[in-house]
Image (cartoon, rainbow, N blue to C red; front, side, top):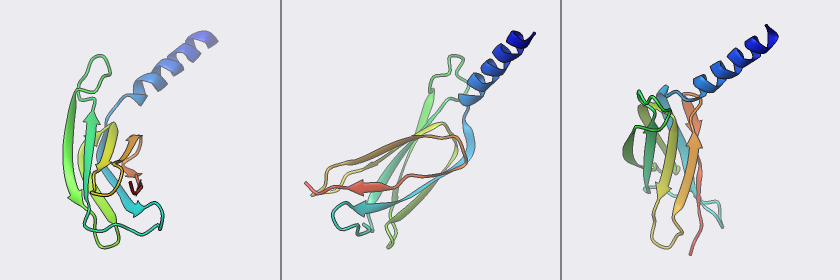
Amino acid sequence: MRSTLCITLILLIFLSCNKDVKDIIIEGVVKESNTGKVLSNIDVTVICWKYGDSPDQSYTEDETKTITTDIKGKYLVKFDKGAFVEVKISLDGYIEGYETKEIYQKKSLIDVILKQR
């Protein structure tokens, strides 16, 4: 009996981990690595991967949005659902900034630090 309960619990945890989170918000700050200075008016590309109705728990769709940082170097983007995000920034004179994160809650913080070439 106890082993059946443990197996059932493990299966429930595994299956619950591979679901899209609804109404997600991804936000962060873009900074320069040497000075810590925020970088305003920078384009940030966020790719949000979704499971959708995948029977094999693989990502079935993605949505890409590009937003611009404000005067404080902050960005914010919303998606209707998602499970994994990529944040990319290309800026002349800097090595491409790239961060990824699995989504487990509605609001996620992803700061990006750009290094000069």
